[in-house]
Length: 456
Picture 1 (cartoon, rainbow, N blue to C red):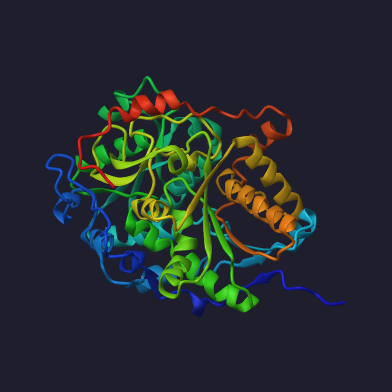
Picture 2: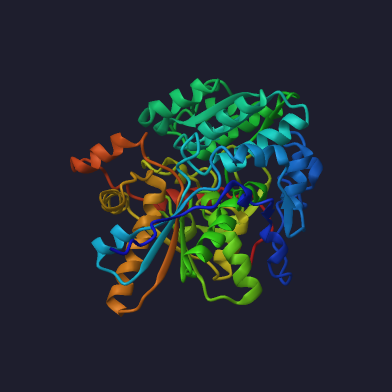
């Protein structure tokens, strides 16, 4: 009997030594639009970011270098879960009766159960090196908050987390996980901050509101910095260990992906897997396609407008060039709480604008249908966020079947769904809602975009 390889595993010596900085490979004409100071509307410089970020991360944020070395202390901690495995989804392929070859990079084996510690460890390290004693942050579904709590514990830092209200209620054991690692967790909007008190009319909360709260606390305390789990360049930079490993593992499998798929909320999971492949496509003109899957209830890339906007609800951050639904747009509650964000990574948005990345939006029930099909074939119960990517994978596999053409698909399974079983219960009992996206709410939010130069 011939056995087909299921998983492709690298040894610890294969953990990348450098992060991939896609900024160095972007077309110089036109140059990527810079973030702007919210007051002067001039390009934001290091001094504008230094009240809440250590200089080492600020320099990574603006670096023109194609690669940035990973500190040995960070790489040593990566060994706790990296390299992560690449799986061939033979059983899903059989269930779909497709000629497509489906591969997935699984990040759920890290201590917090997702891809998020790839950047949490790097950020905690640089803040500790800078003498910072405490980090504040926001979290949507709790994956990022868990990762930062874990990383802060490793480096002896305090951690204060503002967790989006609807997820705080839906996922109590994510809160427990953060508390085990010593973090303080607030339901956002909270009464702890002026920003939170100003948003009490939105009890379900949003990532934008939680960001405002965390930034406010960091800005008011000299020994405290803010840590962001997605969106910014340095965050996506840290995640590129995923794609670099996947490049080597696809080579082990003897295949090249025709399409790379990831879910998108702020962009860290998608960028981490896709950016090393995007760099190769930009350098070699490889024909790889890239698909970003987002929730139809918060369709930033598919229905937002490309403009300068705040990264938070209250307006404390620099203005970022991105697709946005409006910084005070509060998405309806969905179980993929990590994807409920009004904007997206400027780097990713630029790739969508240039047509290098295709964006698709999916409704909640169809993503859970895809997740259950995956779990019943492959065994792993996915988090609701990567369920969006799985839905896109199934669509691609069915298209390959209809066309009668073999297609190689690679997607990111960025975390497990062990803390999301209440959502699976709702789906299996036919009680899971499909929240509607409100065009009217988006248009109302877009009317409050800050004054800034127009983006072409």
